[in-house]
Length: 198
Ligand SMILES: [Zn+2]
Image (cartoon, protein in one colour):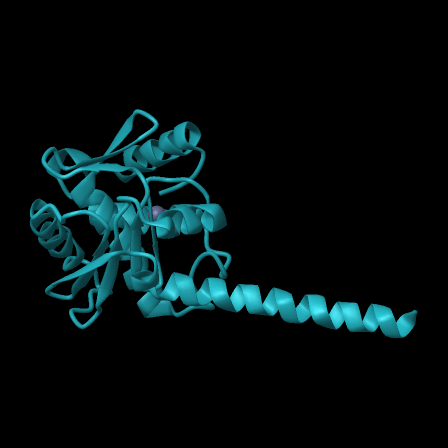
């Protein structure tokens, strides 16, 4: 009996590791779940449908905002994963929860419905400025590149106001958006509406 339990524990562990490994490969290689890949400067955009050319200027504008960060790194190549029919966004959503977008490692994943012409992403009736959303998530990638895997969220226990507040500080630079307290209130507000952070 003991022998049998041991055997099954081993089998389950191996299966678990295999599935985790498979998920990791899928997460690190968006090309496996997207039909198309387009390169724009340091960005690689993954998409299923025809790419809206407006996105490239929105990426440039987001990148300009990033340049104000002391963590800015012009060698950093980022993957931009669009929510246009790929299973990739669903996979990240299942693992990390539903939100406007997510920035981790060297990837920015959009979950909401993007309107490139009007420059916003909509999720459950709530809109977020697309350029600023991209800059926010890219800032998380800069934080990750600077601090590394173990000292970044969600592995490291960093206060949300620091981690998110910094991303908002970089992303929201319009003259009427300089109030960090108001920005954090806004983040908390979206948290209540959408049920998760950006
Ligand atoms: Zn964030």
